[in-house]
Image (tube, rainbow, N blue to C red; front, side, top):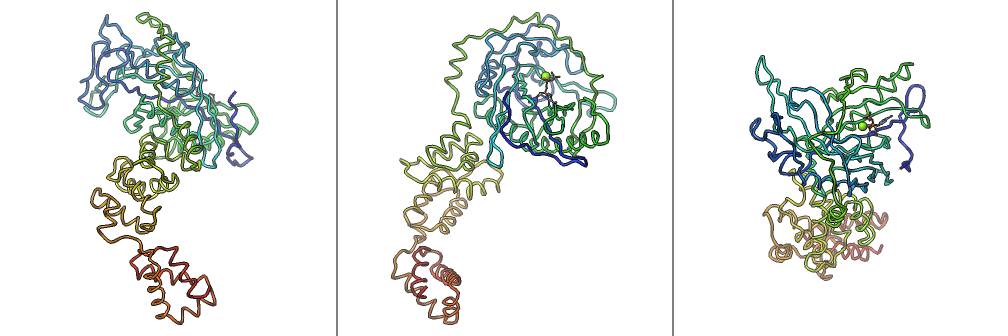
Length: 494
Ligand code: ADP
Ligand code: MG
């Protein structure tokens, strides 16, 4: 199914080419105020064991009660991943012992997840697209946290995260390079944020990936995979895959076999290392949780959620390209997060609209983004508002200022934390001079003062640019560059 339609990026080994095969299991913390089966808060931070109910602490006889909001978030995500929504799903106990797992099992979904098969489209740098299959999405509880560095001879347990709802989103092994895996994670995070199902904050652990990697000769069956656990940044996903693929290729080229095992990525060393082998793998003895009835949701609820979904990045990108004529690259950047897309549309439509989409996109992706990056904030959280971008674009389009002066106007807005572009231009005499007589005068003066350059330019017309530069300088950058250019050429007889 879902055979990706692109030429995979092959890795050169000592004995020939290899193809890397990747499948991802992503854990996304569900955005909800309360935990999956208890009313305790999911708030990040707080003192250890501040957000723990009797259910989360697994006191005897406590019963889990499903949080409807978490179910809705899972359905929302499933719909955004074009997936099958299962109206009946089952919660199972996944049994294992861990000090920070007081129940002695995690409530998860095994054979009957709430969401079945779906897909997600990723955009690659060369402009091609790959459709990645989604195998399933299920709901489960997060575990607590053991703290080993608080006391010389004791470990502590913090149950604040115990019972927080996670969605595990499992992809098919459809990814064929580190770049594709990073693009997958980026797009998945973007979708989760668009729909508000997960904040996508990888630094806080709200989103983390188990990365399954194997290698094979092109065209051969899949090789044995290793699973790299809990990778918590998109950059690390790329590094872990590059390292792991090379490691497996080296083993195979040496005549060895890859052991199926769980590995950890050591970010400081840029390496993966063994955590446990398949032989040590747990037998979780899954069985349906007797404290919970099968989860049954109605078709009406699914339809209602479907109707409330926002426009998703794919659809938005297609619309920006088709209706606004933006190139795929620009549209892709603008839709990467919902706030930037909204910012762009607000600038484009400000005061009735009518401006050139490409010009608005250029300003946002260029100077405004550069400023936002410099101060480490997203574009929509800077003092440069959509109406400023709209105003600047209008002034250029109307021939009031040149692109160069527009940069000065933006600098003033940034410096002063705001301002009306038109007023800034008026009050500070930044208006472009299109008055031909004034420009002619400046051109004549520069020509008269530089007879030697005139001779040179007449011999080599590309040197006319020097005169244009001098005239722009003489007019404080306010002369209309097209007019200057035309006049210089006319006067030099070019
Ligand atoms: P298990 O049930 O043992 O966890 P799954 O078949 O559910 O295994 O696969 C888990 C993840 O591993 C999925 O994301 C899947 O795409 C990926 N995967 C499966 N086989 C391979 C392989 N040969 N190479 C890379 N990834 C794989
Ligand atoms: Mg699995």
